Length: 152
Image (cartoon, rainbow, N blue to C red; front, top):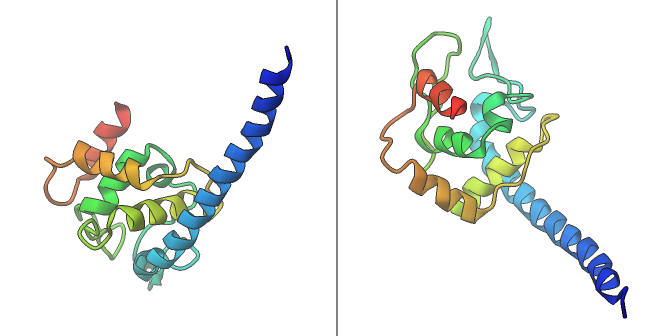
C-alpha cells in the first residue's frame, strides 16, 4: 500500500499530459484557421509578406511579442499596434472585436507554436483574463507601451 500513492500518480501524470496535448492540438487547429486574417500581412509562413523592398509586417519567427508574455500578445492582437514608423507597410490592425475568446486563444497558441516558435498554450480562460487586464487601454498600443509592459 505504501507505493499505491506513487502508482496512482504515475498513471495520472501521463493522462494529464495527453489531455494537455489534445487541448493544444485543438487550439492549434482552430488557430491555424483564424490565422488566415493574420496571413494577409504576416504571410502563411509567418515571415512577413514582401511588398517591394519592404514587408507588410514583421516575421513572427522568434518574435519577442509572439513568444514572450502572452498577455502582451493578447493586447497587441486585440488593440493593434500604432503606426509610428515606416519600417513596415502595414499596420497591426485591432482584431479583438473579430475574435472571440476561443478564436483568440487558438490564434495565439498557433503563433506561439508555429514558425519555429515554442511557447506555452493560451486557453480561452487566459484570454478572458487578459481582456479584463487591459480593458482600460483604448486604441492601438505604441511600441513604447509594449516595451513598458515587457519590463514589468
